Amino acid sequence: MDTHRQITELAVAAGRSLLSEETNFLHRGDRIPISDNALFALALLRQRTQESVTEAKELLERILFFQNKQGDFPANLHEFPNGAPSLSNLLLPTIHWALKGYRNVLGKELVQKLKIAAGQMTPPTSLKGRAAAYALGIEDQAPESAKEVSADALFAMQILDSVSPELLEKLKAGIHPATGLYTPYSDQQQQKALEPAVGQLDLFIASVTGEFPKRLLTPCRAHLYGALIQPFPEKMELPEKKKWSYGAGESLRLVWGNHDLVRTLLAVGIDDLKADGDELSMRLPDPRLFFPIIEEMKILVEGEPSTTFQMGEQVTISDGDFNLELIFEGKGRLTGHIHRGNRPGQLLAKGESRFDAHDWHLFLRGDEPETAMVTMRIKGG
Image 1 (cartoon, rainbow, N blue to C red):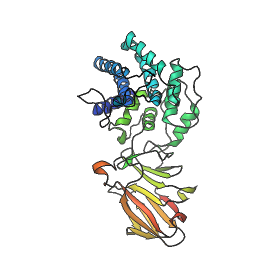
Image 2 (image 1 turned 90 degrees about the vertical axis):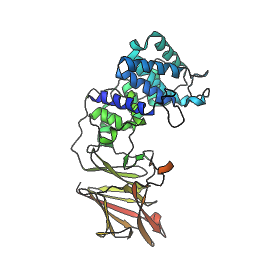
Image 3 (image 1 turned 90 degrees about the horizontal axis):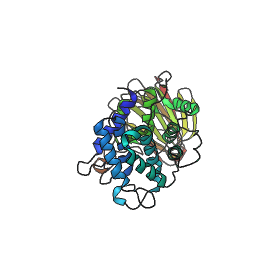
Image 4 (image 1 turned 30 degrees about the horizontal axis):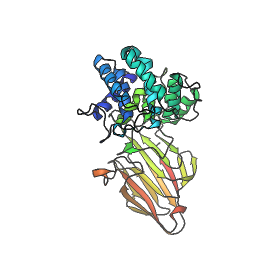
């Protein structure tokens, strides 16, 4: 199966998993989000079968009914007639691709309805929304090309049909080839059990590289955004598969593993990061580290199993072929602890599963924990 088809099929499968037989809408709990349903309609159009096109057209007709007098759609159907002006950031790109690729099968009446609906929405603010507004003839000026990598910037680039070599080079530089993960870290990124949750950028990376890590093959809501992704003109060739990489901002995420299982270590709230070959050092104003609980993971303090450690002692984390040595330093009396827990952004830490632990949580207690420094030495990378 080619990459474009696979992304489409995953988007449709994700939609089917959320589809209610009672309402024929996609649900998120007890809500019916307009955004999910619009993306699902576009994914159905991309399947190009008679049945899927008919289903898509019926769904679009039902969605259009919920545009209010101000031109906006509700975030969720039950909120009508209240509108969510920001929804134009998603609906305009969806309408753009529906009209560009499927005008003939939509029919004149539905095409006209979609055009009118698009022209009445609150002006968008996102890059992809503004790009779609320009492409649809609603706005006179296209947005400037983005300088930083984001799914929003890549969506806009494809809508404007204007490939940015600079943006794609930045994307390429940030991908860890062995796992297919984009490593520059944002505190908005989420975790699902042992691995990073699938996001829109993951789908772009799969599209441009043609490689689908195992975690991308289980349909989830994020796959619906694949309906907006178009084929790239050239496949991106990634460099040699280095075992590890890292991304840092307010926190640091160390990445290793492969397409079958992505492993990450998260250091929360870092400062003064220094990198020298296979050694990273940083200050930890809020000394908390998280790494996944997997069977192969061994944690040793000075070569012995332990759940506590002192400053200056070597803590080794190993999963067989990847070894990480940690040395902590700090002022005052500080003691390190290793317990089970969950990193910030863990999606499964709620409801009946809120007490389930997916990470080892390494933290410090004592007089002045904010003075802590850690040095990480990476072996076998």
